[in-house]
Length: 111
Length: 113
Image 1 (tube, rainbow over the protein chains, first blue to last red):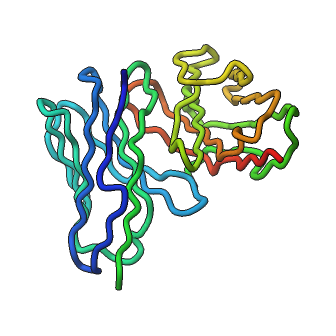
Image 2: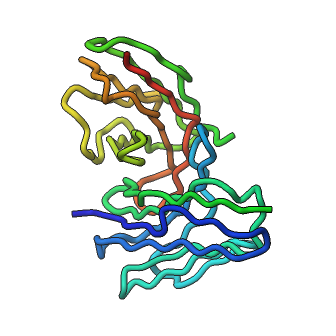
Protein backbone atom coordinates (compact mmCIF):
# COMPACT_ATOMS: atom_id res chain seq x y z
CA UNK A 1 0.00 0.00 0.00
CA UNK A 2 0.93 3.64 0.08
CA UNK A 3 3.46 4.44 2.77
CA UNK A 4 6.02 7.16 3.52
CA UNK A 5 8.82 6.54 6.00
CA UNK A 6 10.59 9.57 7.50
CA UNK A 7 13.83 9.74 9.47
CA UNK A 8 14.99 10.84 11.94
CA UNK A 9 12.05 11.39 14.28
CA UNK A 10 14.01 14.00 16.23
CA UNK A 11 16.98 16.10 15.18
CA UNK A 12 18.96 18.55 17.26
CA UNK A 13 21.54 20.85 15.65
CA UNK A 14 23.54 23.93 16.61
CA UNK A 15 22.59 27.23 15.06
CA UNK A 16 24.42 27.62 11.76
CA UNK A 17 24.73 23.88 11.13
CA UNK A 18 22.90 22.00 8.40
CA UNK A 19 19.95 19.68 8.93
CA UNK A 20 18.94 16.80 6.69
CA UNK A 21 15.67 14.87 6.83
CA UNK A 22 15.10 11.81 4.68
CA UNK A 23 11.97 10.12 3.37
CA UNK A 24 11.22 6.98 1.43
CA UNK A 25 7.97 6.32 -0.39
CA UNK A 26 6.47 3.04 -1.50
CA UNK A 27 4.19 3.93 -4.40
CA UNK A 28 6.28 4.27 -7.55
CA UNK A 29 3.42 6.17 -9.19
CA UNK A 30 3.84 9.07 -6.73
CA UNK A 31 4.68 12.21 -8.68
CA UNK A 32 4.61 15.15 -6.27
CA UNK A 33 6.54 15.53 -3.02
CA UNK A 34 5.83 18.50 -0.73
CA UNK A 35 7.47 19.38 2.58
CA UNK A 36 5.54 21.04 5.37
CA UNK A 37 6.67 22.86 8.50
CA UNK A 38 4.35 22.77 11.49
CA UNK A 39 4.75 24.79 14.65
CA UNK A 40 3.02 23.64 17.80
CA UNK A 41 -0.76 23.89 17.50
CA UNK A 42 -0.55 25.57 14.11
CA UNK A 43 -1.39 24.48 10.59
CA UNK A 44 1.16 22.72 8.36
CA UNK A 45 2.78 25.26 6.04
CA UNK A 46 4.18 24.31 2.67
CA UNK A 47 7.87 25.25 2.54
CA UNK A 48 9.06 23.57 -0.64
CA UNK A 49 7.94 20.89 -3.08
CA UNK A 50 9.36 18.87 -5.94
CA UNK A 51 7.81 17.05 -8.86
CA UNK A 52 8.92 13.72 -10.25
CA UNK A 53 10.45 15.22 -13.40
CA UNK A 54 12.97 17.22 -11.34
CA UNK A 55 15.93 15.93 -9.34
CA UNK A 56 16.65 18.94 -7.15
CA UNK A 57 15.07 22.25 -6.18
CA UNK A 58 16.42 25.04 -4.02
CA UNK A 59 14.85 28.05 -2.32
CA UNK A 60 17.32 30.14 -0.33
CA UNK A 61 18.44 28.00 2.64
CA UNK A 62 16.14 25.11 1.80
CA UNK A 63 16.70 22.43 -0.83
CA UNK A 64 14.99 19.19 -1.73
CA UNK A 65 16.43 16.28 -3.69
CA UNK A 66 14.57 13.39 -5.28
CA UNK A 67 15.89 10.00 -6.34
CA UNK A 68 13.06 8.30 -8.20
CA UNK A 69 14.96 5.06 -8.73
CA UNK A 70 15.54 4.59 -5.02
CA UNK A 71 12.21 6.23 -4.11
CA UNK A 72 14.00 8.59 -1.73
CA UNK A 73 13.64 12.32 -1.22
CA UNK A 74 15.38 14.58 1.27
CA UNK A 75 15.09 18.04 2.78
CA UNK A 76 18.24 20.04 3.39
CA UNK A 77 18.29 23.16 5.54
CA UNK A 78 21.54 25.10 5.64
CA UNK A 79 22.65 27.78 8.11
CA UNK A 80 19.91 26.78 10.53
CA UNK A 81 18.35 29.39 12.80
CA UNK A 82 16.34 29.02 16.02
CA UNK A 83 13.18 29.94 14.13
CA UNK A 84 13.65 26.82 12.00
CA UNK A 85 12.71 24.78 15.09
CA UNK A 86 9.45 22.97 14.32
CA UNK A 87 8.09 19.63 13.16
CA UNK A 88 8.74 18.90 9.50
CA UNK A 89 6.62 16.51 7.45
CA UNK A 90 7.38 15.02 4.10
CA UNK A 91 4.55 13.75 1.91
CA UNK A 92 3.96 11.96 -1.35
CA UNK A 93 0.89 12.28 -3.48
CA UNK A 94 -0.87 10.27 -6.11
CA UNK A 95 -4.39 9.44 -7.19
CA UNK A 96 -6.10 12.76 -7.34
CA UNK A 97 -3.86 14.51 -4.89
CA UNK A 98 -4.29 12.91 -1.48
CA UNK A 99 -1.17 13.38 0.61
CA UNK A 100 0.46 10.46 2.38
CA UNK A 101 2.56 11.93 5.18
CA UNK A 102 5.68 10.74 6.87
CA UNK A 103 5.70 10.50 10.64
CA UNK A 104 7.34 13.88 11.13
CA UNK A 105 10.74 15.10 12.33
CA UNK A 106 11.00 17.38 15.33
CA UNK A 107 13.87 19.74 14.58
CA UNK A 108 15.45 21.67 17.40
CA UNK A 109 18.01 24.39 16.59
CA UNK A 110 20.03 25.42 19.63
CA UNK A 111 21.38 28.97 19.78
CA UNK B 1 -2.74 33.16 6.39
CA UNK B 2 -3.34 30.46 3.77
CA UNK B 3 -6.77 31.71 2.70
CA UNK B 4 -8.43 28.50 3.90
CA UNK B 5 -10.83 29.05 6.78
CA UNK B 6 -12.18 26.52 9.26
CA UNK B 7 -14.81 26.79 11.95
CA UNK B 8 -15.05 26.29 14.80
CA UNK B 9 -11.54 26.65 16.13
CA UNK B 10 -12.24 24.51 19.19
CA UNK B 11 -14.98 22.02 19.92
CA UNK B 12 -15.57 20.20 23.18
CA UNK B 13 -18.27 17.57 23.28
CA UNK B 14 -19.25 14.30 24.92
CA UNK B 15 -19.03 10.71 23.73
CA UNK B 16 -21.92 9.66 21.57
CA UNK B 17 -22.55 13.14 20.22
CA UNK B 18 -22.41 14.41 16.64
CA UNK B 19 -20.50 17.47 15.40
CA UNK B 20 -20.01 19.29 12.11
CA UNK B 21 -16.75 20.91 11.06
CA UNK B 22 -16.80 23.49 8.32
CA UNK B 23 -14.19 24.51 5.77
CA UNK B 24 -14.05 27.24 3.14
CA UNK B 25 -11.33 26.75 0.53
CA UNK B 26 -9.16 29.47 -0.99
CA UNK B 27 -10.84 31.48 -3.69
CA UNK B 28 -10.58 29.56 -6.96
CA UNK B 29 -9.64 26.22 -5.41
CA UNK B 30 -11.87 23.32 -6.49
CA UNK B 31 -10.38 20.54 -4.34
CA UNK B 32 -10.93 20.15 -0.62
CA UNK B 33 -9.15 17.59 1.52
CA UNK B 34 -9.75 16.58 5.12
CA UNK B 35 -6.95 15.31 7.37
CA UNK B 36 -6.92 14.11 10.95
CA UNK B 37 -3.91 14.73 13.17
CA UNK B 38 -3.61 12.85 16.43
CA UNK B 39 -0.56 12.35 18.62
CA UNK B 40 -0.18 8.65 17.88
CA UNK B 41 -1.28 8.58 14.23
CA UNK B 42 0.29 11.68 12.74
CA UNK B 43 -1.42 13.33 9.77
CA UNK B 44 -3.92 10.98 8.16
CA UNK B 45 -5.86 11.63 4.97
CA UNK B 46 -9.60 11.20 5.40
CA UNK B 47 -11.37 12.26 2.23
CA UNK B 48 -11.13 14.50 -0.84
CA UNK B 49 -13.76 16.36 -2.84
CA UNK B 50 -13.31 17.96 -6.21
CA UNK B 51 -15.90 20.40 -7.50
CA UNK B 52 -18.64 18.83 -5.44
CA UNK B 53 -17.82 15.19 -6.04
CA UNK B 54 -15.98 12.71 -3.86
CA UNK B 55 -12.58 12.03 -5.44
CA UNK B 56 -10.65 9.87 -2.98
CA UNK B 57 -11.18 8.23 0.37
CA UNK B 58 -8.67 7.31 3.03
CA UNK B 59 -9.16 5.37 6.24
CA UNK B 60 -12.27 7.31 7.11
CA UNK B 61 -14.55 5.68 9.65
CA UNK B 62 -18.13 4.89 8.69
CA UNK B 63 -19.22 7.21 11.52
CA UNK B 64 -17.63 10.08 9.58
CA UNK B 65 -19.02 11.64 6.43
CA UNK B 66 -18.34 14.71 4.38
CA UNK B 67 -19.73 16.73 1.52
CA UNK B 68 -18.81 19.67 -0.67
CA UNK B 69 -21.50 22.17 -1.52
CA UNK B 70 -22.07 24.11 -4.78
CA UNK B 71 -20.27 27.13 -3.32
CA UNK B 72 -17.31 24.74 -2.74
CA UNK B 73 -17.29 24.92 1.03
CA UNK B 74 -17.12 21.55 2.73
CA UNK B 75 -18.40 20.01 5.92
CA UNK B 76 -17.09 17.02 7.84
CA UNK B 77 -19.66 15.28 10.01
CA UNK B 78 -18.50 13.13 12.90
CA UNK B 79 -21.10 11.06 14.72
CA UNK B 80 -21.27 8.63 17.65
CA UNK B 81 -18.11 10.29 18.90
CA UNK B 82 -15.57 8.29 20.88
CA UNK B 83 -12.70 9.42 23.07
CA UNK B 84 -10.27 8.36 20.37
CA UNK B 85 -11.77 10.85 17.91
CA UNK B 86 -10.16 13.68 19.83
CA UNK B 87 -7.71 15.24 17.39
CA UNK B 88 -6.91 18.23 15.22
CA UNK B 89 -8.92 18.17 12.01
CA UNK B 90 -7.42 20.06 9.11
CA UNK B 91 -8.95 21.04 5.85
CA UNK B 92 -6.73 21.79 2.87
CA UNK B 93 -7.53 23.10 -0.58
CA UNK B 94 -5.86 23.12 -3.97
CA UNK B 95 -6.62 24.42 -7.42
CA UNK B 96 -6.97 20.98 -8.93
CA UNK B 97 -6.06 17.46 -7.93
CA UNK B 98 -2.84 15.57 -8.28
CA UNK B 99 0.39 17.51 -8.22
CA UNK B 100 -0.91 20.85 -7.07
CA UNK B 101 -0.02 22.61 -3.85
CA UNK B 102 -2.32 22.02 -0.90
CA UNK B 103 -2.82 24.86 1.54
CA UNK B 104 -4.00 24.05 5.01
CA UNK B 105 -6.54 25.82 7.16
CA UNK B 106 -5.92 26.59 10.85
CA UNK B 107 -7.66 23.39 11.96
CA UNK B 108 -10.42 22.49 14.38
CA UNK B 109 -9.36 21.01 17.68
CA UNK B 110 -11.94 18.44 18.74
CA UNK B 111 -11.98 17.21 22.32
CA UNK B 112 -14.34 14.36 23.20
CA UNK B 113 -14.92 13.93 26.93
